[in-house]
Length: 338
Image 1 (cartoon, rainbow, N blue to C red):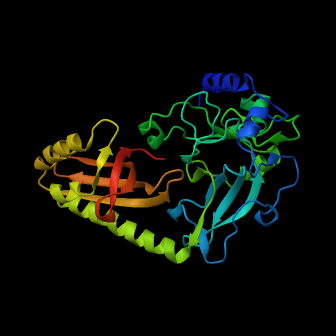
Image 2 (image 1 turned 180 degrees about the vertical axis):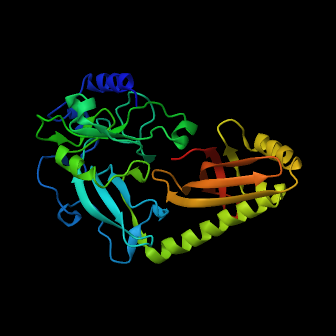
């Protein structure tokens, strides 16, 4: 990130910031499960109340499948104001919290829609860099992880705003109420310093949701198997240039941000008519149940496409929603990552 942009974001965020004390209006809106940041020692998840503790056979319901490149996930419960650092257990799809800490979120709560609404987003985001203390004003404490808000789903829903970060406290601040930021997630500096060793930019996902739900490992496995088969079937008919079967995988409300379903169908028929053969494959496939939405699945993967007249390899993002006959259908498709 360019220094001029960092400076601009710092100055914007600093205007009107409340460094201590509680905002009465905000506290009146959300008081259930309120927490506050403090400068105490790091704590294990067992010593923090407010979260639904899993049995040994239960896993985070939203983390259906993450490829081996991911070893950690940040799951932030906005309802209670608690951040969980989750680590993968072995090589399977089991994730366990290894650290939990209270955080501050937006003064107006969660569910960001508009720039300046003082709300923290609900969604799944990436972190691509860490900005150190030496590049920031004291407002950000010892550093910051910028989050990839707005992501593709936010943009599709025309949500606005930017500069949503996970950052530290000003060094002179001892505590801070749960509802107190401009929309960022704020955590104590000691925890942020510790987490730097466990967050790998580009290989960590951040889930912002009201409450982390747990499901049986067997239930997640069944859904994961079904989704992978659905995805493989889509790749198969695409590779076979079977356009009718291919389009059956798309939701009637599909868009890629520019084309609706009818326009997409015409475009894909024209493309496939120019092909003699095609081969489409996928690697590093990740599935997430999307927080704050009903029956919405977020997927990202690395796609390799080759045909008689075109070759391309790159990252893709798909969002799937249940449609006709209770089948998962693609409602959004685009390039890039979450």
